[in-house]
Image 1 (spheres, helix red, strand yellow):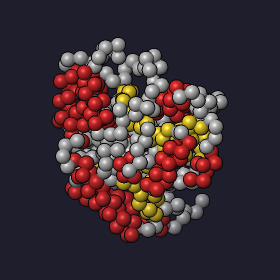
Image 2: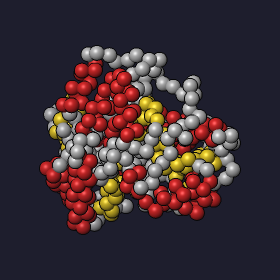
Image 3: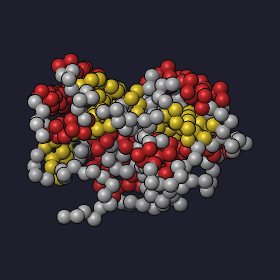
Image 4: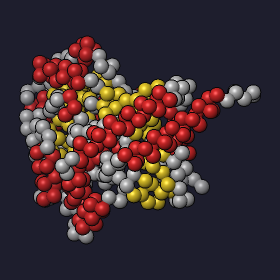
Length: 401
């Protein structure tokens, strides 16, 4: 049967009916341990009672009014994000790509409002992923996402990761900002060292540039801190978040200082659905849980335990696992070059665990933040089994054609 859905996804022939905690149940009844989290979205797992209650309670009252009117739950969520971050102002969106669009516009408008409209260009990094809109695919610079869509949106200059000299060389009279993911997700869980991020901050301060962090995947507790910028002590001027803040409900946000956001005045930006009462209720419910005393510390501890156990698997299976990367519960397994990461992800599914392929031949572990030692042990056992299956396949004699 031909699907009426636009064929832009290579979908796996697997459908899920329900989920609880870190587990998903497929339509045939098979259970899977979800260590992909819907690509870092299911921050509190599935069927979390507090999120379900918030959604149902708000759904019975009011879904949408538009941003022509005050939305009290949005005011509350924005204040909570401001209180727990560097930011002074928040703009709510429906997705990470929209949050990045807002960030890009905010940076450009800042330079224009500062009397330097020519400073619209933004330095970005090879391997980055910032979304699927025309502007964000241009920011990412990945040829496979750009091909066939006409001339790329102008104003983005890609440089190699961790190459400070390349960043310095890219700064010119039209440069207005630097945009970076503290940890590249789609790029393969590639972590930028704190010293590099500190150097970017210094360059921005020296040249009058804005430093922008894309924390769509790293934010809201994922790395063992509320926001990944806390790991380096480097404070951005603008930050985009999404994914985990909605716990599965479509929600994103662009956070900015008053200074960086000074150009974003009445009429410069807007959204019909962004920040609607339903989304705001869920976002506040997520923060209720994530900001509970000890919750994020537990994420850091669980992430360290998982990373240690994965390192043990690397030692046991060097022919399959080349490297373990990441922070907190945003980890990556780089697979040996003899094995394709998508094939390994399929072997993992056969073992009843879901991981997400990424660049650099990596599979990502982005489990719900509510997991503990039991889920870690179960995941390691299933990954171990997948490694043994892969080793057996590698050792098998090649078939004669």
